[in-house]
Length: 272
Length: 303
Image (cartoon, rainbow over all chains, first blue to last red; front, side):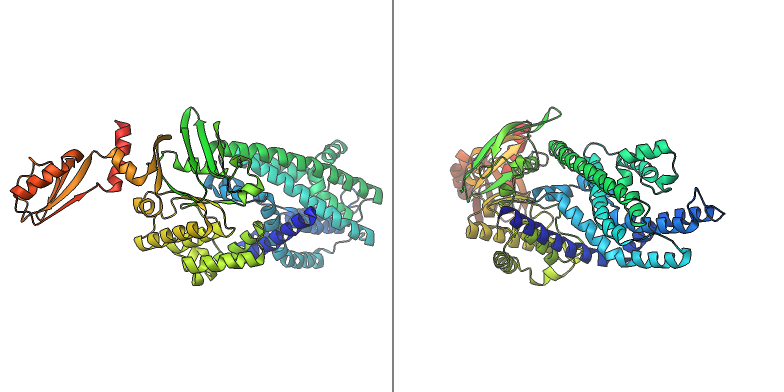
């Protein structure tokens, strides 16, 4: 009896937050488009570099230009679905005291952020899909899409979104302790670039780097759902991957709780 | 349920206590003015009571809750309005932000609409709710800020400078509204303001702090009694030629209108002499303005 009413409350909160975000976004159509384009451009650069490199006979370690095209178009969609901008926002919220209002509300502030993120993703989805379609026409991707990979992609993407959101939200909380948040972000982005599969598919990295990537969370947030969708993985590897996602999700849930509690304590000691 | 609001607070930050050995109680339904110069610790105290600050020592209870635990049941029953901060989303109409709070506080549609109608009527919000907040004037925005903070009908209301920067008409309107809200809901209100008119109009009782310490806690009239040993006598003469120094301290004279400061116990005697010895057109005996009294409270502490 208690749980459904809480869920109902959250559902209504998410619906309202969606409307609020939508109304705000409509006011800033141009900047939204610019943000989306910049999120699209990065994978596009890698797509062009790798598919050019793979033009020769045998491609790059057996991966053809069409493989790279498929990989980076899918990666663009996954990256768009999972990225967050929360790390840029928290410092501002803390310094300008808008976090105070969030703390006065009888609901955990993370919900508003998740809802806000999902809302803007939904709004920009058509644009991203249109770009993906154009790229598909230009670069002739080839992939081994199968019903089970498409079906398994959905939960893998949801897990990837949640994992990336929780980790980046936790990282954003660093702003409670330091004003040099951008240095921390920079380290994070470099790790992300290498270990998530953004700069190159992980299969192209040396075995020892792949070993490290397997225990870090980054690959599970971006590269894994892409490889799964394209049929690069066996069903067994796909299941193991989702297991790793679930394990990291559990860890990050614990982490976000601990860091949030400690952060609020610091905030409420200093005041804003 | 209507537990008295109790607090006994002591707080330290880097060995500079913002609030120190401050102790006071509020009864349910009471409206209390919380006064002090800038940096006295008013906002710090309000934030502690609203659960935003964690004191290093001391204790405090609001509605029976420890505020900084921020329990949902507690947060649903209080509000904090900060005159210099906004919770409304800047780019969209206030009505949309209201809807968001309806979901956050899980208000039933019936309760929500009843409260919204009431607030719309009392604060004359009608046309303001549909305009993006950034297009509202400061006063209009403040009315909407107050409304959103009260949508969940909190029983305890903390107001930190709710009228700051507003013109006199708007200040008066907001004052009248706060009075009405307190009357209708029996809500407990703790209010800080730099405008003494706010406090005079709304609060029988005032709590005065300075350097984080309690200076005075009692009714306004008592404050005047305790901190002023003087009365002001305003005498209207033909011009400013006369020398009134023998009667008291001459504060000013404009167009024959002298303002004198006289020790309280000599008021009757001085008034008698003035009337007997001078061609007095008009005479008025007053308590000094409350601002002056407050100012004296603070300077007394400093010296």
